[in-house]
Image (cartoon, rainbow over all chains, first blue to last red; front, top):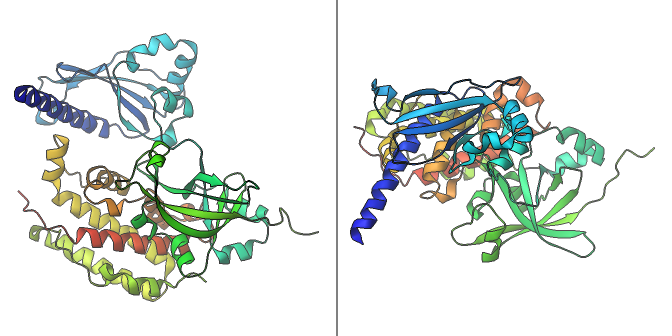
Length: 269
Length: 162
């Protein structure tokens, strides 16, 4: 059995090195690159295949794949080799809708090496099972008490924020029957994925420090719900692991308690 | 009113007393530049210069990550199979490499993607496309993030560069 374990380790090590070599090739193509997928994976083969989708206008598709040695940096012409098949995101999506079977090779034993979700649409993310946020996550922004006081209306707050990239995410874990109070897990974006904030991470953010200094602010969510920050509490809840993309080591989550705030939609006439 | 930058900076023990033992002696110039930038960052925070702090903190963060990743090239190569430090990477790349290879050993300093947006406030169009109060929150968050990162890396001893 010891021999088998060693063999497995050697295979894993070989696969890690191959992945690193493929990622290094992809690194050189990053200009407008939206997705790179290693497909038909087999670590023992001499030839490896990569699909690259680019955010280029129109329906571009490479007629013949490009093949070269993965040791190209050393000037080697020998194995292992990579074959790169490239097309535009638009072309991929059109083929995915009209003739999905013609793309089936790309979904066989695949691994995503790189993605840029800003350049991809939901269709491609879903097709390659790229999950970047937990189900039910609401995204939004922190509004300090000063900013809230200046805004007066929900419309003002929304107009200054709804075109912006969200700063934080909120995953509701409990809500009162009248929907006025709720609590949940705060998230931030790390390497393009929305992950729960840790207790240590929380301390870096103004919303937490303002609350600690008795200056609680507000959370404005996409769509226009506004909540006041009431308190933070660290809770150990192993069951939450099924709801978040990455489980903390100790299963403890700083949860935030919120109360719904109702301010005028528009200025009084 | 939100806490002043000076009061936050006063509490940032690692920024006020930076331990850069993670930087190998061979990278003396890196160390000098990072120390100079940290001193300027503390001075800017003491003077309540929000925009300066947001941008300079981004620059310090990039300097720290650049130097740390360069000094940990062999460690990453061992885990990844192969790794060659690229000095021309963007801040986003360094953040991504750091989070990918050090999140398990340094779980207290996961760096959020938003730091790149904060550093990019150097471009006027980025600030125009941000919330009106962005420099207020960016400067404060960045100070704390850089301080936490320095605090965690303080426990690292520098490896010898081959």
